[in-house]
Structures are given as structure tokens and as C-alpha cells.
View 1 (cartoon, rainbow, N blue to C red):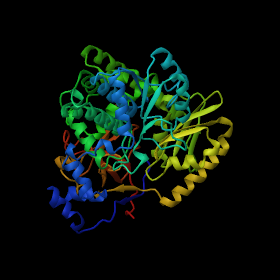
View 2 (cartoon, rainbow, N blue to C red):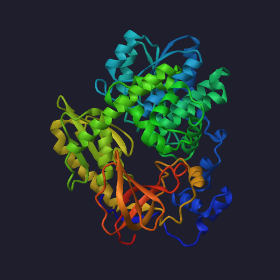
View 3 (tube, one colour):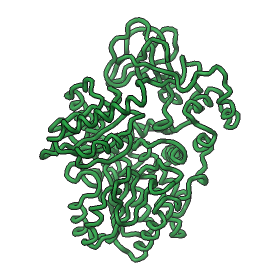
View 4 (cartoon, rainbow, N blue to C red):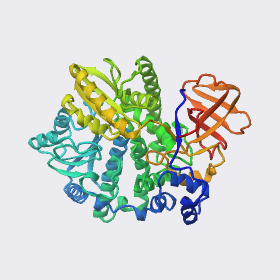
Length: 551
């Protein structure tokens, strides 16, 4: 664990005046209000998470394209047309697929779903898959979730097959829009630009239910239950947990802590997750299990689990996901250990022929965090490099890839997560372009540091107030505090969990993953509360800090 330079978030003021109005308005302690203020949260932002009221959620009919899509779906249901939901293999995609399939079925639709295979079909709309779907299932209407906005050619080719499309997506828009109904928050000034793929599907479901005027899908309890899926997909996709997203996720996490259908109940049991749930439970325990099936093969079983009402079937599916997740961890660890460090390259581009496609994104994310620079890990199939890229906060992967577009076949994604393909023979040119772009972005950001919320643990809000501020995650990061001291005794290690104490400090500290080297003398650590409602005074070590004063 290499020491990291660090700084305090915003200004470290001795006066509490900047955050006192927030404390007074929401009944927070000054410590909790300060934590929110350090995250640039104003009264409007805090209201989304401290006064959660679904009545404040944005009108679904404000989402660009949703009114036309809802009418198109309602007409298809009325004439008993076959509908197929075309999803994606990540958590956002499988939750969106399960959500829309469930809602349409409850409205009487003839509906099924399809998830492309990561290995044989690739991401997004695949013309061969569409051809096969039309021939075998004969849908009249295909509805994409979490994909499709860059698939204008595939949508155009579908016309000759006699099938119509509705595209719902949240990824970056391409140069050419598909010639069909498109539902996307980026098409106009929608109040919540951070909707996930499952968030877009939820808004469409709300609109269709409203047009249907009755039935189970129009009931508040039914729609609230759908927020369980929204929370899973939104957290796992690492979109900002701000504004309306914070409300949807907070309500979804609360619902997950109550009674669940067989599939979700089995998933929670297998992951050993209990109420109250937090965003971290999804990010590190539930999300990886739902992702594993698509990383190691076909993702249909993840959708089946989310839709399952049969306890026996659900237990079998959850056990399958658990086994695949163990396989995924082993493959991921092997690949991570085999890759060389990036050296001085501003962009960490690694091409590893034979690498397992299912774990490229996870390993890229690990390297981006470890080396604090954008990383893309690629395999090679028939002369074409296929990879996943991740970037630390502050970088914009989509801009980097756009600038390197002449050397790419395809690319798409978000600011901090993207996919790309390129001819393996153009690796040198692509590497040069990505390094130039990353150098420019890094220069604009200044030197990398770890932001902390305070020195010592005296400024930490109590556990109940931390819980009120949930969800923590993208855009509203978990609290991080600096603590100094001497290690008291030896580490206690078991299965990648390493616990220790500091002299004179009652709290226990935990390092996950590889055992850190023995700390010598006085250490300075960055720590976050670890499940503080369940295990008071337990802290998770985020990194070792430079003992020098913060800038």
C-alpha cells in the first residue's frame, strides 16, 4: 500500500457557519451537515435523500421519447402483438430487462426477453441475433433497454424483417440516431441527466402503467417494488447518486430490506446481506453476483432469478450465480497477476491475447484505481482487440476515445467506463493518441490526491446520521477520515480480511484484499466507516497517506 498525497475536501474551516443552515433545516448534527456540505450538497440535494417522497419524482412524461414509446407499447398490448425486450448482460441491463418484462406481463402483454452473449454476440444490438429472434420468436416489436442508441444501422436493417423498434438507453449519443422511437435523457433538457438504463426503463414503465388506467402495474405498491431493481442497477452502473437518483435508490434499498419475492430473497441470502441495506451492499456483494453470470457465460439466468417467484427455482439459480462468481474471482485474480505495471504511460493500455473477456472491465477498474490513470484491458479475437476501459474521477473516457476515433473500430459508454474495439495492428497509433489525450486531461486536473473529510475521528457523525445521508457512492462519496497512530500488535488475517488496531484508539481497522506490508513506526491512514450500524467503531482502510501535512 503506497503512501498517497492527500488533502481536505474544500476548505477546512473552524467556523461551522457554512453548513449550519443545513443542520438547522434538516435536524442534522453539525458533523453530518458538514459532511454533506463537503460534498457540495445544498438544501435541494439533501431534500432528495433526507425527505424521500416519491411524489417529488420527475414526471415520467418529461423524459424525451417516453410518451410516444408508452403509446406504442400500449397499442401493441391491445392488439396482442408479440413483444421482446432486448437487454444487456451487466447489472443495469439485466435489472432493466427484468423490470420492463415484469411490467409488460402484468399488463397482459405477450412478452419475453433476450440478452446477447458477451462472448459470441458482443455489446448492443447484433444483426445476427435480431435475424434469429425474428425467425424463431416472431416478435412484432423489439424494445431495447440499456443499449441501442448507437445502433442506427441495425435498426434500419430490421425494417426489411418487418419488425419495429423502441430504443431505451442512457449511454452517450452517437453521430446518427436510430430511425425509430428513442427514449433517452440526453435528447433534451431532462431534469435528471444521470438516469441509469434501469432508471429509463422504470420511467417508461410508469408511463405505460399510467396510460393503462388500472391493473396491478398502476398500483403504488407495485411501482415501489420495482424500485428494488432500480436501486440494484443504478448503484452497479456507477451513475451519480444525486438528485432524483438518490431518491429512487434510497427507496429501493429500503424496499429490499422488507419482504421480497423468491428470486431477490434467494440472492440476498446467498450474498449474506441483511437489512438495513446500503449502497455498498449492492456495489460489493449483490452486484458482482448478478454480473458474474454474464461475465462467465450467458446472462439470462440473472434475469430469471430476478423474475422468479418459485423458491426452489430461485435457490438453484442463486446457487448457480454464487458458483460463477467464485469462478469469476479466480479468473480475475489470474489475469490481474499476469499483467505488467504501466510504467510512465499516462494511459494504461494493455493488450493481452487470450485474456478472458468477462473480467476485462474489473481488471481495468483495479488498475485505474491502483495507478490512478485511465486503463483499458483488451483481449484479441481474429486480429481485433476488444476491451473495457475505466478511469478515475475527473477523467472523461468518452472524450479520450472520441479524440482517438480514427484508430478505433467502435466505442461507447460513459465518462468513467467504456468499451472499445480496434484492429490489433493499430495498437501503436491508438496508444499514442490515448497517451496524448490522458496527458492533457491530467494536466488540467492537477496532481492526484486522496480527498479526506477531516483529521481524526472526532468529526465523524454518529452511525444513525450516516445512515440518513445514504446512499453514498458515485457523486456523493463515502466519508473518508485521516487517522494517525502506531500499529498495536500483529495483523489478524483470514481469507483476505486483515484486522488491526492502533495504540490508544478503541476502533478496529480492516484492510481487504492483499495483506499490506508491516507498518513501521507511526502511520497515517485514510479510513471509512465499515457497516457502522452493525459493528460500531469498525473502520475500513482506504489507503496509507503521506505523513506530510495536507496541502
